[in-house]
Length: 79
Image (cartoon, rainbow, N blue to C red):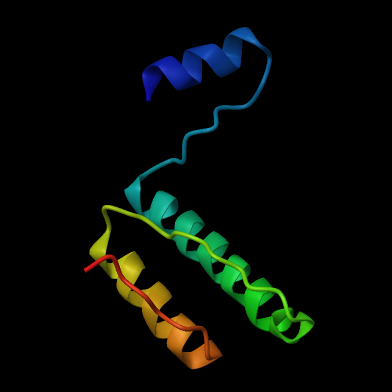
């Protein structure tokens, strides 16, 4: 994470790295939820949307799958 922070500083930008692992998880989860809400809200437009959600955090994936099911979004895994 140090290289990212140094690169941002050299370009006069704020550090793109979150302050800790929990902040990283929260950011991922809220972004995934935003995406799933957009898919749910636009599902009646007749377009098929394919996407991949990936994470090393098993809890984030479980949350996303639960949310997909509650939104009526079909869940398909690579298994």
